[in-house]
Length: 316
Ligand SMILES: Nc1ncnc2c1ncn2[C@@H]1O[C@H](COP(=O)(O)OP(=O)(O)OP(=O)(O)O)[C@@H](O)[C@H]1O
Image (cartoon, rainbow, N blue to C red; front, side, top):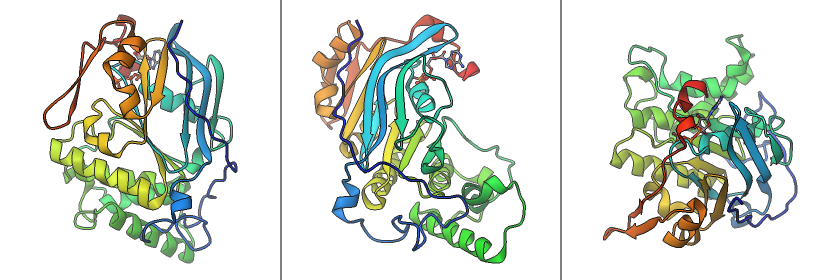
């Protein structure tokens, strides 16, 4: 029987999306300005359920990736999806977005069926990087998030100015002003990641879904990008669901974690979930969680992914 501890589901006032072409942070947007100060406490700590996964399962290539998963994300929360390689962390994001089908159960994203509300979600897929020879500027990468759906067609003057202003605000927000004019292929991994986060914020999403945004960054850059994501969550009121291999760079910022194991998931606060007892129960094998002298958590004995999942990235 899968080990699943359903998360608390709080209900709220439903959802809305920002129509394409409107400045997502403009005065009529209902959104918090990308350069404004902290959001009011009631907005940052809202009660609307943005993502609700109920008794869900996904089957890929004839094999169950996970089943009977329950999880939720509430407005303003910072939630990490954790677990070993191949356990289905990216699959949970993709199924939530309607990019992969559910075999059973239900997902509601911003109060709607998967795929119906994606304009209100900023999604950063796994392992995006730019070829070193790419001459496109960082600014243009962010701009693609604002009006990339127009496939290069010219936009009227006022909308073009609005889009440029939005790009400027987003570049400031992620601290990329010093290098956004340079070709993106020449930027460091951390700089590229900041620009991609700005792109994901371009439509003024209520929810950011980030798939291993700290992957392949060095420790100082992991800390800096983790701090940036937390600031976006707290100050802009954008909920964050982030897939991570290592919880340590984000541990101090997290409201909750969803820990995936073979057959199910457990969610709760990091203190509740990342314990020897809970992970041993999830994996059905002895797991030890050790705390290093600097406060970092080390999970010992975590099982590897099932063998049939070894070619996962080739097919996703
Ligand atoms: N399109 C697909 N067809 C068949 N199997 C797939 C497909 N996409 C993913 N899988 C399998 O589903 C499993 C879960 O993949 P997923 O990428 O979600 O894992 P993950 O936990 O995010 O892994 P990692 O930590 O390595 O990124 C993988 O082992 C993979 O082999």
